[in-house]
Image 1 (tube, rainbow, N blue to C red):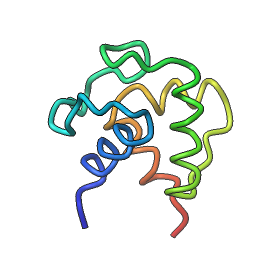
Image 2: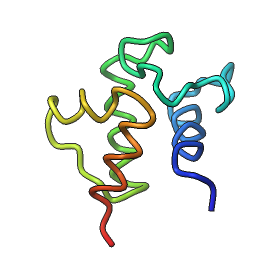
Image 3: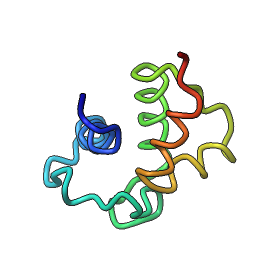
Image 4: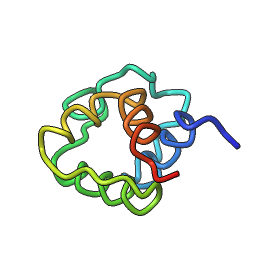
Length: 85
């Protein structure tokens, strides 16, 4: 199986239709929301749905979302810690 961080980059690009980016263009520590990728609050909602449907992990508050979408690494850590076994 692909490593989770790479998989998330691919899904972020697909979900947000960032066709001008490749997974290797996204640094694992780069700020997702409010960073160089132009991800806004509507995009975050799409990402929340992607995470909930794809990984069975709930992001149920703005505070959690801010931490989770800080970077690809933060998102991967949240999924690993909260994914149903």
